[in-house]
Length: 442
Image 1 (cartoon, rainbow, N blue to C red):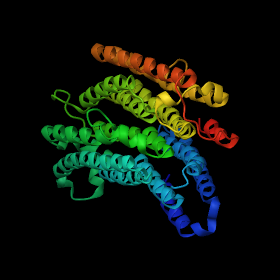
Image 2: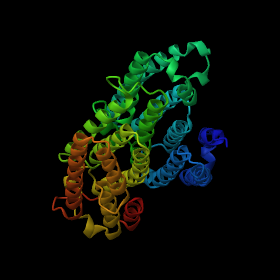
Image 3: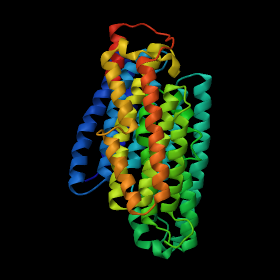
């Protein structure tokens, strides 16, 4: 079944809507949200068909479609809270960003994956700039520069692979993952190892793996909250699974000093530890969620590094659960920041007395992110630790377990402070409509 129409659709509709925007008036946001919902229904059917055939790519498409639906819906409320943001430009870049995410999901070619990742950098960077202040401009510039440098490293690795397969002739299909699987034995082991180091490091920059993560906290905290949901919930995971696709298609000999699996495990473990420690000292609600994303990407990378069928399944579950939970929390964090007039955690407090439904949703999301059983992440994280134990990776088991324990403690600590804290909030209007937007987003 062809997915081309899903990829081209966002570009055509957003461009057409831009031309006729003056005739849409206030219906602009709702029209876009309704269109996303229609496409999501279609992609869900495709995803179900793909799952029946064992096609995990369908899961990425459906998850991307669903989070895009929620992002578009939340954008309706977010734009009302930020009237200085131009809906025209916002939805233009938002649609292009979604198109890039779908391209990454659909791509079965290493070069096309690289192009889609680079395009996603430009589109999401433009969305961060839309905030229009010095901090957002600095965050966007930092994000675009660091991510682009990382992707240049990835491009060097791609050139190594392409040059090694030049005997096949010059064509796009040379870098198809299927062709790489069939021809990887014709690539010199040293070239495969160098290419793997460059590609894992370069694409790992887009995934937010430590030590290539320095752009992530600023970009995610300064981006519009509906965009932060897509950045954290979808883009990081898709970037990481792109790395895994390459590692699986062109494996380095097992006796090599550094294989792709080794690199994923090393970077993943470091990301887990750094992300969990950083959670303990955060004072900004969106930076808290951003560092949690680093920790979550880390455990996904560890699972992909293990590489067993059960570990790969656990990584996929982690991706889906994290996408739903983290995007919801970013939407809620954005509305809470507007309601309280601050993003500082010490200014967001006593939520339980101000919004019962909102506090319940926020607590449920934070506990799910912390890995509280029987919520989804608890199952996938336990499965990953089990696979590490079976593979006798006891040091990684110890570090992973310790990091997850720290994560649980840090997130519960911050949750209790927002629910019952005794700081001095700076509240904006507490109109019923505004409160409803907070409750609905959470």
